[in-house]
Image (cartoon, rainbow, N blue to C red; front, side):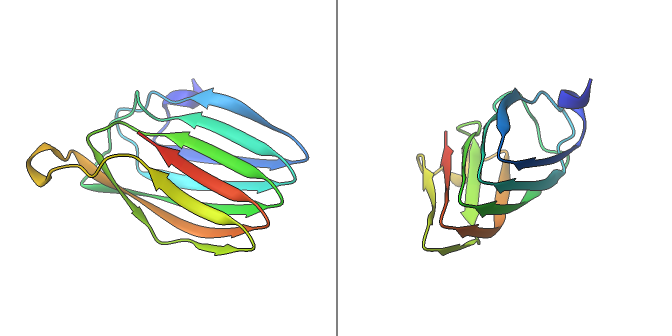
Length: 115
């Protein structure tokens, strides 16, 4: 099943989709969207180590990603005429199960991460 693999690799041009991942060894991945959008649900995932990296590229599109509440989210991306935002609670260090690192670029588009 491609939704339980340890690496997420998606690309969309004028399209997209909704996916719920269930990997118990998530390492990260790469997602590209041009004039489209993705809704990703990672709440069924467990990170393989202490962190996972998602490299994102969004051009005139959007991406919504739902993560487990016990994940810390580190936004390291660059929005250009767009936005990248984590809309969730800060996780207390003793309750943290890993850090999701978001890297990449959103050009005239947006990335929303929610817990």
